[in-house]
Amino acid sequence: MKQYKDHAVSPVVGVMLMLVVTIIIAAVVSGFAGGLVKGQTKAPTATITGTFSVRSGLAINHAGGSAIPSAEMVITTRDGPTFGAGLDSSTVNTVNLANVTNSAGTPIAFFNTATSSVDGYNVTSFNPGDTWYVNITNCNPQLLQPSVAPTSGTLSWSSSTGQWSFSNPTDTLWSLDFVNPSNVGKQFYLDINDKASGAQIARAVVTITG
Image 1 (cartoon, rainbow, N blue to C red):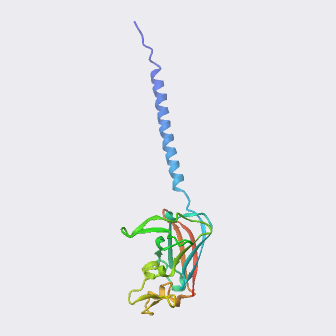
Image 2 (image 1 turned 45 degrees about the horizontal axis):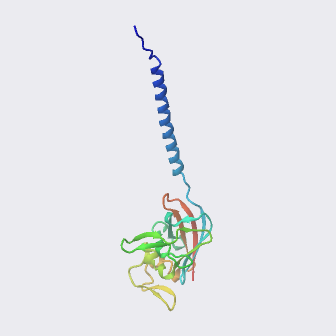
Image 3 (image 1 turned 180 degrees about the horizontal axis):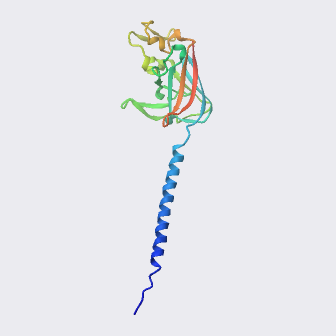
């Protein structure tokens, strides 16, 4: 009678199954580890300083550290304690990079009027040694500080005095605006945060000058 010697088939199949399972587990672990590394990517670090004049506007200087990609940053301002207590959250405003220029006068971002949003960047990164500017006309509170822009009177900029003025100087919101000449000597916070994580990259305390 003919005999078939297949008693070794089961061990071979078992070994193959173990190899397949091992490969799958290795792939899963590798993918998970890769995700962890990607998720733990640190935001850049930098030292930022700023100056503000009621006549010339805001200058933001990258004093050292990492280059910051323009598309990955958010610049905000908020009134400091010298304006009054508890104003941190109510006076925060995002700086529109389309209203910011580099030293050559080139807008950092391109603002698409059709979509009312930023649509690309003319300057791709904020590098050590760079200075960006918000000129005095773009420091109009309706552009720079919309959350506290006064509405109970007329806001105007005089080319003869080189300053902004408001027809109702006792307006509470006007008292919170950087361009108000009465606020010379007060300070505000200038923050740069990582857009994806929200992590703070840098903070500058800016003193308002005449």
